[in-house]
Image 1 (cartoon, rainbow, N blue to C red):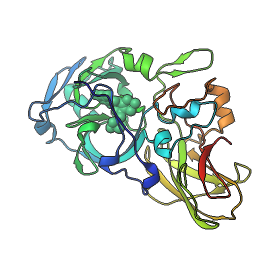
Image 2 (image 1 turned 45 degrees about the horizontal axis):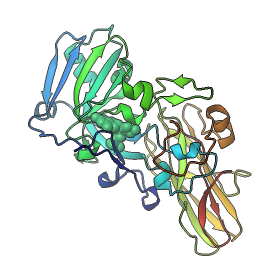
Image 3 (image 1 turned 135 degrees about the horizontal axis):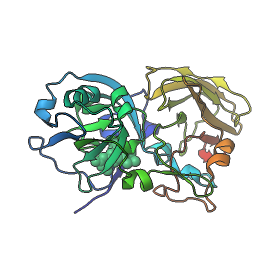
Length: 352
Ligand SMILES: Nc1nc2c(c(=O)[nH]1)N[C@H]1C(S)=C(S)[C@@H](COP(=O)(O)O)O[C@H]1N2
Ligand SMILES: [Mo]
């Protein structure tokens, strides 16, 4: 039987930068395969001098590196394309993004050993699950910072996150981080697979499709207080959330408590690593009046998280309100999230 598994990180219950393994989101379009680690093989072939085959054991003898990286589904936050604010928690809205410390073997080590042809500008990566999910990855990205990850926060990968090995392309669309990795084929042209030309292509106004928009753009959201919570009367509160960018490090996060009229810089309170969750904090005195909490992030390339009006002008919104968190009207939402606080302390998703 085939189960499409789909689980979201409960950001409202977490703090710090690392997502615990059991709470990492997971999307498995064809279910989680039962892989015997002693049988699993990874093959590197195509435009290479020397095709290679690895088992988990032989791959584990190669030099490994450890780094943090987020994985974010391009469909994360998709209910925010709705023309009315979707009434859901931060888990329902932004739960398809998580952050781990990954350990694995650099692709540059493996592709150098295979002797990749300089004309092979792309590498087709394929998973060992029922539908052999496959994506074309630029060879340049493979050399820049891609890993075959074997450990997640110090443990073997979780079954739903790609056990026994996965491709990690830090900062790129979640879907390109091919799990249960079994094949890498060096090729001249992208393969135009289903997942790159249909499922995860972003739609622009007028029906044009922007193919191959790989990096996840700069983004942030407040995880607490957030939709569904209730503040217990006026006084001191801690506003906290995460910011991240597929383009590099977070440089700055600003927070507003008045719907964007005034902003102040939040403290970045954890590691500030490239393509990784960066935790921010801001102490806030609530006076019991209606308030609208927002965060906005900048990355080291100078890119800034767009205001909602700017984002909708570029990307559009739905004609009918989205009422189902599983609806994916579009991809790559990275605008601002606003949480409205009512005089009774109730926190709800609003647009500002
Ligand atoms: N083999 C395989 N790889 C896959 C998928 C899949 O269904 N099969 N899902 C992709 C999608 S859509 C996303 S968003 C990420 C999610 O990674 P995670 O489940 O570890 O969070 O894995 C990607 N890699
Ligand atoms: Mo995804």
